[in-house]
Image (cartoon, rainbow, N blue to C red; front, side, top):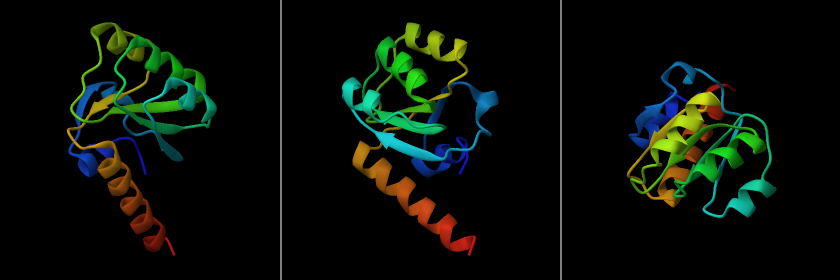
Length: 117
């Protein structure tokens, strides 16, 4: 799955980072606590969150996230968008709830897995 696939799966809007949407996502995580995100450190994952502060972008970058999806229609601050641009981290926004977003991504990953067998 690539970052761009999340746009269709979650009916998401691109906030920044359009030219990085072809990066492959190896995993995803969903969280609204920065300390939990820090404990999740992985490579090339997409972070789903309702947090919109500058710190969530910093935390995502430190932990190996290659994209951030803001759930529940949340919009990050202009400063957070600027930081994401400087770190080449695409930001997406969806009106979906976090649980539904995780379910939809998981269903799509299961489909992909069955199609590659």
